[in-house]
Image (cartoon, rainbow, N blue to C red):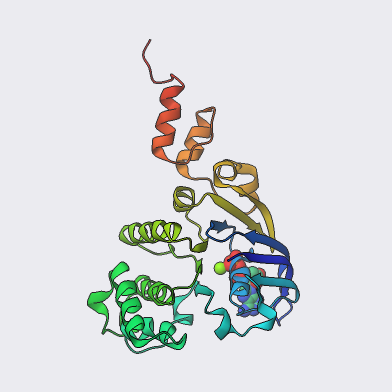
Length: 272
Ligand SMILES: Nc1ncnc2c1ncn2[C@@H]1O[C@H](COP(=O)(O)OP(=O)(O)O)[C@@H](O)[C@H]1O
Ligand SMILES: [Mg+2]
């Protein structure tokens, strides 16, 4: 299902122009990362995808649905949104109830709800805390619960607002696994992140935002090495990319294996 953001502007009621002019097309099954300094408009844009915010100007369509003509409840069938702050999202008394709320609300059959909830809990290693109150868990774990709740709705599109912020290494492993699963079953993913290592490792396409606009949209392989572009919005390339640049390697690299390959291929570590 294609996502089309067509020249949108958004002004908050207090007069802040959060989106100046944003256009973006994401094909079905694509996985795209969005980076940019705080306040660049990432969350505001993300909230347009499920109709939580409606553009002041321009249009957002998800498949054949314009968000202007559909309620947030309808959009929830197509777009799952993980809030940047889980406390905006969580309101049930147990983890299990929280995760079951979405699929139940979408009208899935009870048996299917049960399966979806069990799978979502298992894939985020939450089964043991299923009966706990989300608010008795740490912020990092509440974010896991919020992601499980999004997962359980089984939408074709997932929008994840800073899924990795404040999370531990184990969560990164689980998220990497989920991204691979979603790639295989053709789910579209848009993920906002400040973690360039994570972005570079998992996303082929990178969108850079700055001051309510898209500054750059391209292959991660290219954008990750564009230090000047990234600097404009206070994003640093991954450490390994900066090291390779410092050593003037002939190619942009963003993983350690790639670095080593280029380094060796370049003959710089051979004793002659
Ligand atoms: N609820 C709000 N009311 C007014 N202004 C807001 C609100 N939320 C965000 N903003 C402003 O909109 C701009 C974009 O914010 P946001 O979309 O949250 O950026 P990001 O997610 O990239 O950090 C910022 O100037 C921010 O202060
Ligand atoms: Mg944000």
